[in-house]
Image (cartoon, rainbow over all chains, first blue to last red):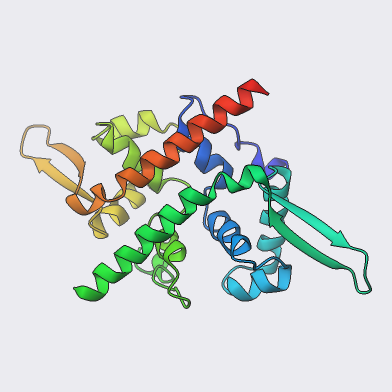
Length: 115
Length: 115
């Protein structure tokens, strides 16, 4: 895992956009955070909510988001054990941005339909 | 190219975030648009500004952004021909969002330094 992320902090120009993309760029992380914020807070719910992601990718990305303190994972000692994800206070700083992304996407879809 | 992007419009839940990510998600597009907005408007300037991107990837992504009418490519009939990229009026709708991304990245880098 560490090896896969060796360029995670590569940002020679100290660019804010690069920093953001290094952290949660890529195809899925923004969507995973967004889904958790909508209470898709368990692995099975996330997998259902994002059907095109593979299980392994979802496992890896959840781990990375946890390592980066954007989400937190709680294991409830039940039988069978229940695992829940939630956005950390630090992760919450991303939500206004993700809401802006969501709004742009919605506006753009509406514009496409109008055409 | 078309084949590589066959899932581009796959958005079963009509989700704004998915729509955005289908369009300019991934590792580089936001950064390319941001760089062009800062007047890195030629291929060689973009390659210099984003040194970790491969030439072929940059070629492909510029084509995709052009296909999606986010950027426009102008060939000036000089010898040797000069090619310039610019953000289209439609692409400009992304800039406030990209500025928010840039600001988040900058704030987050500053917070990391403070720690």
